[in-house]
Image 1 (spheres, rainbow, N blue to C red):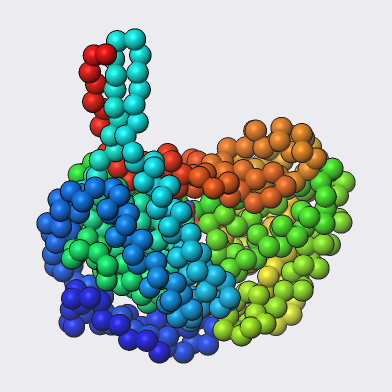
Image 2: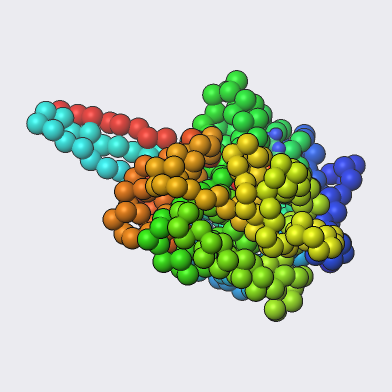
Length: 468
Ligand code: NAD
Protein backbone atom coordinates (compact mmCIF):
# COMPACT_ATOMS: atom_id res chain seq x y z
CA UNK A 1 0.00 0.00 0.00
CA UNK A 2 1.21 3.45 -0.87
CA UNK A 3 0.46 6.63 1.04
CA UNK A 4 1.28 9.89 -0.62
CA UNK A 5 0.99 13.43 0.50
CA UNK A 6 0.67 15.82 -2.41
CA UNK A 7 3.84 17.94 -2.62
CA UNK A 8 3.46 20.97 -0.38
CA UNK A 9 -0.13 21.26 -1.58
CA UNK A 10 -2.13 18.90 0.58
CA UNK A 11 -4.49 20.16 3.21
CA UNK A 12 -5.33 17.79 6.02
CA UNK A 13 -8.90 19.05 6.48
CA UNK A 14 -10.05 17.34 3.28
CA UNK A 15 -10.59 13.60 3.69
CA UNK A 16 -7.99 11.47 1.93
CA UNK A 17 -8.87 9.77 -1.32
CA UNK A 18 -8.69 6.01 -0.80
CA UNK A 19 -7.65 4.09 -3.90
CA UNK A 20 -8.81 0.48 -4.00
CA UNK A 21 -7.39 -2.23 -6.21
CA UNK A 22 -10.34 -3.01 -8.52
CA UNK A 23 -9.34 -6.69 -8.78
CA UNK A 24 -9.10 -7.40 -5.05
CA UNK A 25 -10.85 -4.54 -3.27
CA UNK A 26 -7.70 -4.02 -1.17
CA UNK A 27 -6.54 -0.51 -0.43
CA UNK A 28 -3.81 0.33 -2.96
CA UNK A 29 -3.01 3.64 -1.34
CA UNK A 30 -4.33 7.00 -0.25
CA UNK A 31 -3.66 10.51 -1.39
CA UNK A 32 -4.50 13.90 0.05
CA UNK A 33 -6.74 16.01 -2.18
CA UNK A 34 -5.64 19.57 -2.83
CA UNK A 35 -7.73 22.36 -1.33
CA UNK A 36 -9.28 24.82 -3.77
CA UNK A 37 -7.30 27.65 -2.18
CA UNK A 38 -4.08 25.74 -2.74
CA UNK A 39 -4.99 25.24 -6.40
CA UNK A 40 -5.07 29.05 -6.77
CA UNK A 41 -1.67 29.22 -5.06
CA UNK A 42 -0.23 26.54 -7.36
CA UNK A 43 -1.42 28.49 -10.42
CA UNK A 44 0.11 31.69 -8.97
CA UNK A 45 3.44 29.88 -8.45
CA UNK A 46 3.25 28.57 -12.01
CA UNK A 47 2.62 32.13 -13.25
CA UNK A 48 5.64 33.44 -11.31
CA UNK A 49 7.90 30.66 -12.61
CA UNK A 50 6.91 30.99 -16.27
CA UNK A 51 9.03 34.02 -17.42
CA UNK A 52 12.30 32.41 -16.32
CA UNK A 53 11.28 29.06 -17.81
CA UNK A 54 10.45 30.58 -21.20
CA UNK A 55 13.62 32.70 -21.12
CA UNK A 56 15.74 29.54 -21.07
CA UNK A 57 14.86 28.89 -24.71
CA UNK A 58 13.49 25.75 -26.29
CA UNK A 59 16.80 23.80 -26.48
CA UNK A 60 17.67 24.34 -22.82
CA UNK A 61 14.13 23.44 -21.76
CA UNK A 62 14.40 20.22 -23.77
CA UNK A 63 17.70 19.39 -22.07
CA UNK A 64 16.20 19.91 -18.60
CA UNK A 65 13.16 17.72 -19.30
CA UNK A 66 15.36 15.01 -20.87
CA UNK A 67 17.38 14.89 -17.66
CA UNK A 68 14.38 13.17 -16.03
CA UNK A 69 14.57 10.19 -18.39
CA UNK A 70 16.95 8.10 -16.26
CA UNK A 71 14.70 8.48 -13.20
CA UNK A 72 11.62 7.66 -15.29
CA UNK A 73 13.33 4.50 -16.57
CA UNK A 74 14.56 3.39 -13.18
CA UNK A 75 11.10 3.81 -11.64
CA UNK A 76 9.14 2.27 -14.53
CA UNK A 77 8.55 -1.09 -12.81
CA UNK A 78 7.41 0.61 -9.61
CA UNK A 79 5.16 2.97 -11.55
CA UNK A 80 3.68 0.09 -13.52
CA UNK A 81 2.96 -1.87 -10.34
CA UNK A 82 1.12 1.16 -8.95
CA UNK A 83 -0.93 1.57 -12.15
CA UNK A 84 -1.86 -2.13 -12.05
CA UNK A 85 -2.96 -1.85 -8.41
CA UNK A 86 -4.86 1.39 -8.96
CA UNK A 87 -6.83 0.66 -12.12
CA UNK A 88 -6.38 -3.06 -12.74
CA UNK A 89 -4.58 -3.33 -16.08
CA UNK A 90 -2.23 -6.33 -16.47
CA UNK A 91 1.14 -5.67 -14.86
CA UNK A 92 3.10 -6.30 -18.07
CA UNK A 93 0.97 -3.71 -19.91
CA UNK A 94 1.28 -1.23 -17.04
CA UNK A 95 5.08 -1.57 -16.94
CA UNK A 96 5.08 -1.41 -20.75
CA UNK A 97 3.20 1.89 -20.55
CA UNK A 98 5.72 3.32 -18.07
CA UNK A 99 8.67 2.12 -20.20
CA UNK A 100 7.11 3.46 -23.40
CA UNK A 101 6.60 6.86 -21.77
CA UNK A 102 10.28 6.96 -20.77
CA UNK A 103 11.94 5.26 -23.77
CA UNK A 104 10.14 7.37 -26.35
CA UNK A 105 10.63 10.64 -24.51
CA UNK A 106 13.97 11.78 -26.00
CA UNK A 107 12.74 11.28 -29.58
CA UNK A 108 9.41 12.92 -28.73
CA UNK A 109 11.15 15.95 -27.22
CA UNK A 110 13.39 16.31 -30.31
CA UNK A 111 10.27 16.25 -32.50
CA UNK A 112 8.60 18.92 -30.35
CA UNK A 113 11.68 21.16 -30.50
CA UNK A 114 11.77 20.90 -34.30
CA UNK A 115 8.04 21.67 -34.55
CA UNK A 116 8.53 24.83 -32.47
CA UNK A 117 11.45 26.24 -34.48
CA UNK A 118 10.45 29.39 -36.41
CA UNK A 119 9.22 28.79 -39.94
CA UNK A 120 9.87 31.23 -42.80
CA UNK A 121 7.34 32.00 -45.54
CA UNK A 122 8.28 34.20 -48.50
CA UNK A 123 6.67 35.67 -51.58
CA UNK A 124 8.02 38.29 -54.02
CA UNK A 125 7.48 41.20 -51.61
CA UNK A 126 7.35 39.84 -48.09
CA UNK A 127 9.31 37.62 -45.75
CA UNK A 128 7.32 36.27 -42.82
CA UNK A 129 8.65 34.42 -39.84
CA UNK A 130 6.22 32.26 -37.85
CA UNK A 131 7.18 31.98 -34.19
CA UNK A 132 5.71 29.53 -31.70
CA UNK A 133 5.55 31.23 -28.30
CA UNK A 134 4.49 29.99 -24.90
CA UNK A 135 0.87 30.61 -23.94
CA UNK A 136 1.57 30.96 -20.19
CA UNK A 137 0.20 28.58 -17.55
CA UNK A 138 -1.31 25.29 -18.69
CA UNK A 139 -3.75 23.08 -16.78
CA UNK A 140 -3.39 19.39 -17.65
CA UNK A 141 -6.30 17.14 -16.63
CA UNK A 142 -6.05 13.43 -17.37
CA UNK A 143 -8.09 10.18 -17.16
CA UNK A 144 -7.26 6.82 -15.57
CA UNK A 145 -7.13 4.44 -18.53
CA UNK A 146 -3.50 5.21 -19.46
CA UNK A 147 -2.59 6.82 -16.15
CA UNK A 148 1.12 7.34 -16.94
CA UNK A 149 1.04 7.96 -20.69
CA UNK A 150 -1.72 10.60 -20.62
CA UNK A 151 0.09 12.98 -18.21
CA UNK A 152 3.30 12.47 -20.24
CA UNK A 153 1.68 13.15 -23.62
CA UNK A 154 -0.01 16.31 -22.36
CA UNK A 155 2.47 17.89 -19.97
CA UNK A 156 5.71 17.40 -21.94
CA UNK A 157 4.75 19.34 -25.10
CA UNK A 158 3.27 22.09 -22.92
CA UNK A 159 6.54 22.37 -20.94
CA UNK A 160 8.83 22.32 -23.98
CA UNK A 161 6.72 25.10 -25.54
CA UNK A 162 7.63 27.26 -22.52
CA UNK A 163 4.45 26.95 -20.53
CA UNK A 164 4.43 26.08 -16.86
CA UNK A 165 2.04 23.28 -15.94
CA UNK A 166 -0.36 22.36 -13.16
CA UNK A 167 -1.31 18.69 -13.58
CA UNK A 168 -4.42 17.08 -12.12
CA UNK A 169 -4.48 13.34 -12.77
CA UNK A 170 -7.56 11.17 -12.34
CA UNK A 171 -8.66 10.49 -8.77
CA UNK A 172 -8.88 6.80 -9.78
CA UNK A 173 -5.15 6.50 -10.50
CA UNK A 174 -3.30 9.43 -8.87
CA UNK A 175 -0.39 7.49 -7.37
CA UNK A 176 1.40 6.38 -10.53
CA UNK A 177 0.79 9.80 -12.09
CA UNK A 178 2.25 11.41 -8.97
CA UNK A 179 5.35 9.23 -9.25
CA UNK A 180 5.71 10.18 -12.94
CA UNK A 181 5.38 13.88 -12.13
CA UNK A 182 7.85 13.74 -9.22
CA UNK A 183 10.56 12.43 -11.61
CA UNK A 184 10.16 15.64 -13.63
CA UNK A 185 9.57 17.97 -10.69
CA UNK A 186 12.93 16.83 -9.26
CA UNK A 187 14.81 18.20 -12.29
CA UNK A 188 12.70 21.25 -13.16
CA UNK A 189 12.98 24.72 -11.61
CA UNK A 190 10.48 25.27 -8.77
CA UNK A 191 6.93 25.95 -9.89
CA UNK A 192 7.43 24.84 -13.52
CA UNK A 193 5.48 21.59 -13.01
CA UNK A 194 3.17 21.04 -10.05
CA UNK A 195 0.66 18.31 -9.34
CA UNK A 196 -2.68 18.74 -7.60
CA UNK A 197 -5.06 15.97 -6.63
CA UNK A 198 -8.80 15.44 -6.44
CA UNK A 199 -11.85 14.74 -8.56
CA UNK A 200 -14.11 16.93 -10.67
CA UNK A 201 -14.27 19.56 -7.93
CA UNK A 202 -10.53 20.17 -8.16
CA UNK A 203 -10.59 19.75 -11.95
CA UNK A 204 -13.28 22.36 -12.32
CA UNK A 205 -11.48 24.74 -9.93
CA UNK A 206 -8.31 24.38 -12.00
CA UNK A 207 -10.22 25.11 -15.21
CA UNK A 208 -11.76 28.25 -13.65
CA UNK A 209 -8.44 29.43 -12.17
CA UNK A 210 -6.10 31.90 -13.91
CA UNK A 211 -4.71 29.40 -16.44
CA UNK A 212 -4.25 30.23 -20.13
CA UNK A 213 -4.48 26.80 -21.71
CA UNK A 214 -6.43 23.70 -20.69
CA UNK A 215 -5.25 20.33 -21.99
CA UNK A 216 -7.91 17.78 -21.16
CA UNK A 217 -8.21 14.10 -21.95
CA UNK A 218 -11.40 12.44 -20.80
CA UNK A 219 -15.07 11.96 -21.53
CA UNK A 220 -17.18 13.97 -23.94
CA UNK A 221 -19.49 15.00 -21.06
CA UNK A 222 -16.63 16.44 -18.99
CA UNK A 223 -15.18 18.06 -22.12
CA UNK A 224 -18.46 19.95 -22.57
CA UNK A 225 -18.38 21.14 -18.94
CA UNK A 226 -14.79 22.32 -19.37
CA UNK A 227 -15.69 24.21 -22.53
CA UNK A 228 -18.50 25.93 -20.65
CA UNK A 229 -16.27 26.80 -17.67
CA UNK A 230 -13.47 28.04 -19.93
CA UNK A 231 -15.79 30.23 -21.99
CA UNK A 232 -15.79 33.27 -19.70
CA UNK A 233 -12.03 33.65 -20.02
CA UNK A 234 -11.98 32.41 -23.66
CA UNK A 235 -9.22 30.06 -22.56
CA UNK A 236 -7.37 28.02 -25.14
CA UNK A 237 -8.54 24.38 -25.14
CA UNK A 238 -7.14 21.07 -26.28
CA UNK A 239 -9.85 18.46 -25.64
CA UNK A 240 -9.14 14.81 -26.43
CA UNK A 241 -12.47 13.11 -25.81
CA UNK A 242 -14.24 9.77 -26.00
CA UNK A 243 -14.99 7.64 -29.01
CA UNK A 244 -17.30 4.97 -30.42
CA UNK A 245 -14.93 3.52 -32.97
CA UNK A 246 -16.31 1.38 -35.80
CA UNK A 247 -14.62 -1.60 -37.43
CA UNK A 248 -15.84 -2.44 -40.93
CA UNK A 249 -15.16 -5.95 -42.21
CA UNK A 250 -15.69 -6.18 -45.98
CA UNK A 251 -16.61 -9.40 -47.75
CA UNK A 252 -13.10 -9.74 -49.22
CA UNK A 253 -11.31 -9.24 -45.89
CA UNK A 254 -8.82 -11.68 -44.37
CA UNK A 255 -11.28 -12.94 -41.77
CA UNK A 256 -8.65 -14.43 -39.47
CA UNK A 257 -6.77 -11.13 -39.33
CA UNK A 258 -9.97 -9.07 -38.94
CA UNK A 259 -11.21 -11.26 -36.08
CA UNK A 260 -7.83 -11.17 -34.33
CA UNK A 261 -7.88 -7.38 -34.58
CA UNK A 262 -11.47 -7.23 -33.27
CA UNK A 263 -10.58 -9.40 -30.27
CA UNK A 264 -7.50 -7.36 -29.42
CA UNK A 265 -9.08 -3.98 -30.01
CA UNK A 266 -12.40 -4.67 -28.29
CA UNK A 267 -10.98 -6.33 -25.17
CA UNK A 268 -7.52 -4.77 -24.60
CA UNK A 269 -7.40 -2.96 -21.24
CA UNK A 270 -10.91 -4.43 -20.71
CA UNK A 271 -12.14 -2.20 -23.50
CA UNK A 272 -11.09 0.90 -21.58
CA UNK A 273 -9.25 2.49 -24.49
CA UNK A 274 -10.47 5.62 -26.28
CA UNK A 275 -9.89 3.92 -29.66
CA UNK A 276 -11.37 0.56 -28.67
CA UNK A 277 -13.47 -1.10 -31.33
CA UNK A 278 -17.00 -0.52 -30.01
CA UNK A 279 -19.10 -1.20 -33.13
CA UNK A 280 -18.45 -3.87 -35.74
CA UNK A 281 -20.14 -3.87 -39.17
CA UNK A 282 -19.47 -7.09 -41.04
CA UNK A 283 -20.53 -8.10 -44.55
CA UNK A 284 -23.34 -10.67 -44.50
CA UNK A 285 -21.36 -13.15 -46.59
CA UNK A 286 -18.54 -13.47 -44.04
CA UNK A 287 -20.44 -12.60 -40.86
CA UNK A 288 -20.82 -16.16 -39.55
CA UNK A 289 -17.13 -17.05 -39.96
CA UNK A 290 -16.00 -13.72 -38.52
CA UNK A 291 -18.35 -13.90 -35.52
CA UNK A 292 -17.32 -17.48 -34.70
CA UNK A 293 -13.64 -16.43 -34.76
CA UNK A 294 -14.33 -13.48 -32.44
CA UNK A 295 -16.17 -15.77 -29.99
CA UNK A 296 -13.21 -18.20 -30.06
CA UNK A 297 -10.82 -15.31 -29.39
CA UNK A 298 -12.91 -14.01 -26.50
CA UNK A 299 -13.13 -17.49 -24.98
CA UNK A 300 -9.34 -17.91 -25.12
CA UNK A 301 -8.55 -14.73 -23.15
CA UNK A 302 -7.34 -15.23 -19.59
CA UNK A 303 -9.01 -12.81 -17.23
CA UNK A 304 -8.00 -12.15 -13.64
CA UNK A 305 -6.06 -9.97 -11.24
CA UNK A 306 -3.67 -7.91 -13.35
CA UNK A 307 -0.85 -8.70 -10.93
CA UNK A 308 -0.82 -12.37 -12.04
CA UNK A 309 1.58 -13.18 -14.88
CA UNK A 310 -1.09 -15.21 -16.72
CA UNK A 311 -3.66 -12.39 -16.87
CA UNK A 312 -4.44 -10.97 -20.29
CA UNK A 313 -7.36 -8.78 -19.26
CA UNK A 314 -8.11 -7.41 -15.82
CA UNK A 315 -11.22 -6.00 -14.15
CA UNK A 316 -13.00 -2.75 -14.92
CA UNK A 317 -11.16 0.13 -13.28
CA UNK A 318 -14.02 0.89 -10.90
CA UNK A 319 -17.52 -0.13 -9.84
CA UNK A 320 -18.75 3.05 -11.55
CA UNK A 321 -17.27 1.94 -14.88
CA UNK A 322 -18.69 -1.57 -14.47
CA UNK A 323 -22.17 -0.13 -13.91
CA UNK A 324 -21.99 1.99 -17.08
CA UNK A 325 -21.09 -1.09 -19.14
CA UNK A 326 -23.61 -3.43 -17.47
CA UNK A 327 -26.46 -0.92 -17.90
CA UNK A 328 -25.76 -0.77 -21.64
CA UNK A 329 -25.38 -4.54 -21.88
CA UNK A 330 -28.60 -5.33 -20.01
CA UNK A 331 -30.46 -2.64 -21.98
CA UNK A 332 -29.30 -4.15 -25.29
CA UNK A 333 -30.35 -7.65 -24.24
CA UNK A 334 -33.72 -6.41 -23.04
CA UNK A 335 -34.18 -4.84 -26.49
CA UNK A 336 -33.38 -8.05 -28.37
CA UNK A 337 -29.60 -8.33 -28.64
CA UNK A 338 -28.15 -11.81 -28.13
CA UNK A 339 -25.04 -12.56 -26.08
CA UNK A 340 -23.03 -15.31 -27.82
CA UNK A 341 -20.32 -15.35 -25.17
CA UNK A 342 -19.41 -13.46 -22.00
CA UNK A 343 -21.37 -11.56 -19.41
CA UNK A 344 -25.14 -12.15 -19.71
CA UNK A 345 -24.63 -15.45 -21.61
CA UNK A 346 -26.68 -17.39 -19.06
CA UNK A 347 -23.74 -18.31 -16.84
CA UNK A 348 -23.23 -16.76 -13.40
CA UNK A 349 -22.47 -13.04 -13.40
CA UNK A 350 -18.84 -12.06 -12.81
CA UNK A 351 -18.01 -11.00 -9.28
CA UNK A 352 -16.63 -7.67 -8.16
CA UNK A 353 -15.50 -5.31 -10.88
CA UNK A 354 -14.98 -8.01 -13.51
CA UNK A 355 -16.88 -8.23 -16.80
CA UNK A 356 -16.11 -11.21 -19.04
CA UNK A 357 -15.14 -10.35 -22.63
CA UNK A 358 -18.53 -10.33 -24.30
CA UNK A 359 -19.71 -10.83 -27.88
CA UNK A 360 -23.12 -9.41 -28.80
CA UNK A 361 -25.11 -9.85 -32.02
CA UNK A 362 -28.56 -8.64 -33.02
CA UNK A 363 -27.72 -5.07 -32.01
CA UNK A 364 -29.24 -1.96 -33.59
CA UNK A 365 -28.54 1.75 -33.51
CA UNK A 366 -31.63 2.20 -31.32
CA UNK A 367 -29.58 0.67 -28.48
CA UNK A 368 -27.36 2.70 -26.17
CA UNK A 369 -24.60 0.11 -26.65
CA UNK A 370 -24.31 1.20 -30.31
CA UNK A 371 -24.72 4.92 -29.65
CA UNK A 372 -22.95 5.83 -26.41
CA UNK A 373 -19.34 5.18 -25.46
CA UNK A 374 -19.21 1.83 -23.62
CA UNK A 375 -15.57 1.70 -22.47
CA UNK A 376 -15.88 -1.96 -21.61
CA UNK A 377 -14.99 -5.41 -23.03
CA UNK A 378 -17.91 -5.77 -25.43
CA UNK A 379 -17.72 -6.60 -29.15
CA UNK A 380 -21.08 -5.62 -30.68
CA UNK A 381 -21.51 -7.10 -34.17
CA UNK A 382 -24.02 -5.96 -36.82
CA UNK A 383 -24.41 -7.57 -40.24
CA UNK A 384 -24.52 -5.28 -43.29
CA UNK A 385 -25.61 -5.88 -46.88
CA UNK A 386 -23.23 -3.48 -48.64
CA UNK A 387 -20.17 -1.29 -48.23
CA UNK A 388 -22.44 1.77 -48.45
CA UNK A 389 -24.59 0.53 -45.58
CA UNK A 390 -21.45 -0.06 -43.48
CA UNK A 391 -20.23 3.50 -44.16
CA UNK A 392 -23.62 5.03 -43.35
CA UNK A 393 -23.83 3.15 -40.04
CA UNK A 394 -20.18 3.83 -39.12
CA UNK A 395 -20.77 7.58 -39.63
CA UNK A 396 -24.07 7.54 -37.71
CA UNK A 397 -22.53 8.88 -34.47
CA UNK A 398 -21.57 12.19 -32.89
CA UNK A 399 -18.12 10.73 -32.21
CA UNK A 400 -15.22 10.57 -34.66
CA UNK A 401 -12.03 9.39 -33.01
CA UNK A 402 -10.68 6.26 -34.74
CA UNK A 403 -11.99 3.72 -37.26
CA UNK A 404 -10.69 0.61 -38.98
CA UNK A 405 -11.54 -1.13 -42.25
CA UNK A 406 -10.51 -4.66 -43.17
CA UNK A 407 -10.72 -5.76 -46.81
CA UNK A 408 -8.71 -5.84 -50.04
CA UNK A 409 -6.45 -2.79 -50.14
CA UNK A 410 -8.22 -0.72 -52.83
CA UNK A 411 -11.73 -1.49 -51.68
CA UNK A 412 -10.87 -0.87 -48.03
CA UNK A 413 -9.16 2.41 -49.00
CA UNK A 414 -12.31 3.53 -50.88
CA UNK A 415 -14.41 2.81 -47.78
CA UNK A 416 -11.86 4.48 -45.47
CA UNK A 417 -12.06 7.69 -47.56
CA UNK A 418 -15.72 8.01 -46.67
CA UNK A 419 -15.40 7.68 -42.89
CA UNK A 420 -15.72 10.70 -40.62
CA UNK A 421 -12.99 9.97 -38.12
CA UNK A 422 -9.77 11.66 -37.12
CA UNK A 423 -7.70 8.50 -37.58
CA UNK A 424 -8.49 5.55 -39.85
CA UNK A 425 -6.55 2.28 -40.10
CA UNK A 426 -6.69 0.02 -43.16
CA UNK A 427 -6.19 -3.63 -42.20
CA UNK A 428 -4.71 -2.38 -38.91
CA UNK A 429 -5.41 -0.07 -35.98
CA UNK A 430 -5.68 3.68 -36.35
CA UNK A 431 -2.31 4.75 -34.86
CA UNK A 432 -0.12 6.45 -37.47
CA UNK A 433 3.58 6.47 -38.37
CA UNK A 434 6.03 8.38 -36.18
CA UNK A 435 5.17 12.08 -36.43
CA UNK A 436 1.43 11.51 -36.99
CA UNK A 437 -1.03 13.47 -34.89
CA UNK A 438 -3.44 11.91 -32.39
CA UNK A 439 -6.61 13.55 -33.56
CA UNK A 440 -10.34 13.18 -33.14
CA UNK A 441 -13.08 14.46 -35.44
CA UNK A 442 -16.56 15.70 -34.49
CA UNK A 443 -17.23 15.53 -30.74
CA UNK A 444 -14.20 13.30 -30.06
CA UNK A 445 -11.79 16.19 -30.25
CA UNK A 446 -11.36 19.91 -30.13
CA UNK A 447 -7.68 20.50 -30.73
CA UNK A 448 -5.27 17.58 -30.80
CA UNK A 449 -1.74 16.53 -29.91
CA UNK A 450 1.39 14.86 -31.32
CA UNK A 451 3.14 15.33 -34.63
CA UNK A 452 4.31 18.72 -35.91
CA UNK A 453 0.82 20.21 -36.04
CA UNK A 454 -0.18 18.74 -32.69
CA UNK A 455 2.91 20.08 -30.89
CA UNK A 456 2.16 23.56 -32.21
CA UNK A 457 -1.24 23.56 -30.50
CA UNK A 458 0.55 24.01 -27.17
CA UNK A 459 1.99 27.32 -28.38
CA UNK A 460 0.78 30.70 -29.59
CA UNK A 461 1.68 31.33 -33.21
CA UNK A 462 3.07 34.83 -33.93
CA UNK A 463 3.71 36.06 -37.45
CA UNK A 464 6.38 38.76 -38.04
CA UNK A 465 6.70 40.18 -41.56
CA UNK A 466 9.06 42.53 -43.37
CA UNK A 467 9.63 43.65 -46.91
CA UNK A 468 12.13 41.61 -48.93
P1 NAD B 1 -13.72 11.83 -17.03
O1 NAD B 1 -14.14 12.83 -18.04
O2 NAD B 1 -14.72 11.32 -16.08
O3 NAD B 1 -12.51 12.41 -16.14
C1 NAD B 1 -11.30 12.85 -16.72
C2 NAD B 1 -10.62 13.84 -15.78
O4 NAD B 1 -11.44 15.01 -15.65
C3 NAD B 1 -10.41 13.32 -14.37
O5 NAD B 1 -9.14 13.77 -13.91
C4 NAD B 1 -11.53 13.98 -13.57
O6 NAD B 1 -11.26 14.15 -12.20
C5 NAD B 1 -11.62 15.32 -14.27
N1 NAD B 1 -12.91 16.02 -14.15
C6 NAD B 1 -14.12 15.50 -13.87
N2 NAD B 1 -15.06 16.48 -13.90
C7 NAD B 1 -14.42 17.63 -14.22
C8 NAD B 1 -14.84 18.98 -14.40
N3 NAD B 1 -16.13 19.35 -14.29
N4 NAD B 1 -13.92 19.91 -14.75
C9 NAD B 1 -12.62 19.54 -14.91
N5 NAD B 1 -12.16 18.29 -14.71
C10 NAD B 1 -13.05 17.33 -14.38
O7 NAD B 1 -13.06 10.63 -17.87
P2 NAD B 1 -12.47 9.27 -17.29
O8 NAD B 1 -13.60 8.37 -16.92
O9 NAD B 1 -11.40 9.55 -16.33
O10 NAD B 1 -11.74 8.69 -18.60
C11 NAD B 1 -12.39 7.99 -19.63
C12 NAD B 1 -12.69 8.88 -20.81
O11 NAD B 1 -11.46 9.43 -21.34
C13 NAD B 1 -13.32 8.13 -21.95
O12 NAD B 1 -14.36 8.90 -22.49
C14 NAD B 1 -12.19 7.99 -22.95
O13 NAD B 1 -12.59 7.79 -24.29
C15 NAD B 1 -11.47 9.28 -22.75
N6 NAD B 1 -10.10 9.23 -23.31
C16 NAD B 1 -9.84 9.87 -24.47
C17 NAD B 1 -8.57 9.79 -25.04
C18 NAD B 1 -8.24 10.47 -26.35
O14 NAD B 1 -7.07 10.47 -26.73
N7 NAD B 1 -9.20 11.03 -27.07
C19 NAD B 1 -7.56 9.08 -24.37
C20 NAD B 1 -7.86 8.45 -23.15
C21 NAD B 1 -9.16 8.53 -22.62
